[in-house]
Length: 166
Image 1 (cartoon, rainbow, N blue to C red):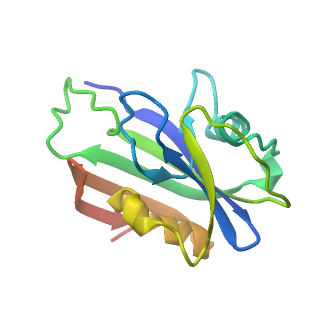
Image 2: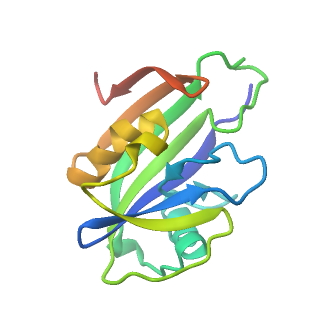
């Protein structure tokens, strides 16, 4: 059985703008050409909170403390056609912990995985994001609801998704 992968994802907000990463620098990147939030895989011995604090600094240059972050929930992502016993597809079988943070300034930072862009909250490029991100990103950005979700994909298309007790 393939072990479940753990990761974090955060949305950084300044006034009425959100910071997104356009994945365009890493070779063979599963997220190539997509806008995503900030985050990454948990390292051995790391909690989700420790991971997102590290990832925010590594990917954006923001040094934050745990009391600045709002935990918004978690999402499970998987691929319906994946062989659950031995196939480890790059972006699936993930449990991702979601965070939200407001910052007091914008900083410029060179990210090794892609380019960072600030978007007005009314002009988020949903058409250039994963189809699941289009569904859950507004919930993280515009509500304080705790999010528990599951997204099942077939390739890049969502086959099924649920929130909480749906």
